[in-house]
Image 1 (cartoon, rainbow over the protein chains, first blue to last red):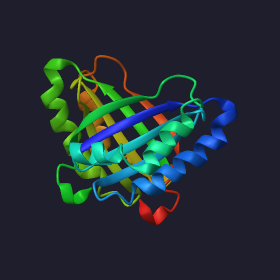
Image 2: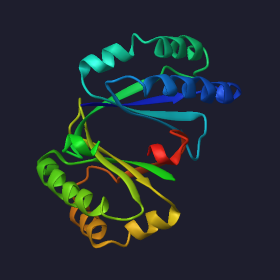
Image 3: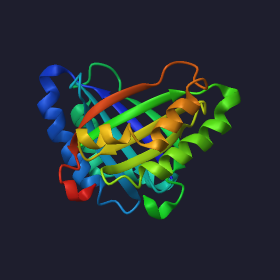
Length: 102
Length: 102
């Protein structure tokens, strides 16, 4: 299982547009067979900062996601709405160690 | 719903002990009625860094968690195992906006 936290710092004037674009990407992503979670979060004390909590079944599922129309549309749409390049941090799972609990 | 990402930088010589202690805290936390998720993750390119993805039903559930024996034991146990103070970042949920999808 592959967990990636994607951190995005959005320009203040694009915050509402970004929420709309990421919601569309969310709706597409959760229909992918290899997707486990795709939680979209907005930082409480700094609402221009978003975190996407992405969990995929495998490396192949991550690669497949990056070829979907909803991902590619999102990537191109938000490209100029960010205050700095987005940053993904990858993690290994410690818990839940049982796959069925995900 | 309250989402908090807790970032912990563990001393290299305490990494295995930390994994054990957080696994015990995990097992207790997921039995709490107000807990929704408590994912424990280890950073892929820097395994001394852990991230705990905590989701609770409400502010009350967060406060209740901080009074449980498993939380208090974990907090005291790991206190001197960290390279720097742990840091919690709080988020609002954008997606899934439907509570039943959590």
